[in-house]
Image 1 (cartoon, helix red, strand yellow):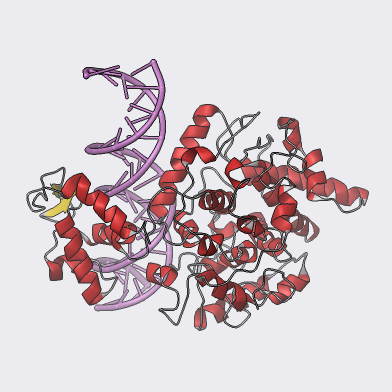
Image 2: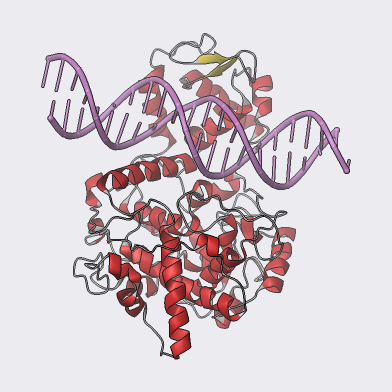
Length: 459
DNA sequence: AATAAAATCAACCGCGCGTTT
DNA sequence: TAAACGCGCGGTTGATTTTAT
């Protein structure tokens, strides 16, 4: 681990702590808070503080952060301690630039989740939500400034394709689509090319089975939820202890991807299976009945599992930019497309230089948000038209070619673009089987899912 | 070399949710 | 049942570093 907490630690030390200002003096930018806690220090942490916190966590474990101040004498509020630990001090943190794979993963995740940084972080071992958030925000700024859209075309294609089944399912089942989330204007997502991947260390990353047989389930859930717009208020925010996420195997209850073992999964299973309205892919559904129907199945992260469908409730329209509210995607769904992470097998410390990601675009989005909503809208229209005309099955590339995406993005041709990361259709790329990978925590996750018909299965 | 602008990063804040009392 | 508490998340801010002029 060349790029772990130690690095951040060093950086910290070099940055603000070489002279180790006394934290009780609030020097070096630190101030004593007047509000929440009397005499609580704010601002940058010192190495001394870090040491205290680390020591405390070693002794007492994570959690109970408000007790840190009492027991360790640290003049920091619990919140601050938790944050410091989570973002900088906990073991196995990976620091440094995001790898190309991670960047792509973030984009994919963001396309599906929106600004769910913590959840995204769960898919990027060693990365923190804050890191991802910062990365994304910078990226957004950069792209905004350049007048570019946020998502690479391949992501658009995948998500669009994934959306089809669910959307039509909702239509078929009489669900009223969420008009309010379906924008009237449609604009495409000009292509972003990730040239770094061309010469990448293998195609493992692209083996992500975004479109594998169970993927449709994922989107089914996601957009089914979106269509309903309901959130299960009781299960909405079950949060996963970070230790559970990042220290797979150390807990019996959950591994990195939320291996629920007991009641939660049962509850979730019932919730999901009973509320399942439409499944374009019953086979995979059987294989992965959403969130733990399979014994020991893994729910990514936090038991946010059954945020939707079951309980009518408030419509959460919180995402400023994206597609899925919390209720609109499903961690279990993400299981469907999240293959064993290449991050587990590719040296995570070979970082790509920032310039390796080259973003190109010919068309800018009129707005910075709702891009996939646009996509969804167009998908709905298209699919609906197809259904009405009884047309034969579309390929994703067909869909894209004929979709309004291309109206706004005439130059896009992901399926034939020779400069495409893999020299073939992004869809096909993501459709391909995941190379067998062994050894990472995700393997356990993967294998336990028991996707019998899925080439990514490691069984 | 100096300055400004942009990018990056760390940390804080407010809010919401779940649990405990 | 309601209030208090603890925790985590996402948004935002401010400091620092890097890059461009």
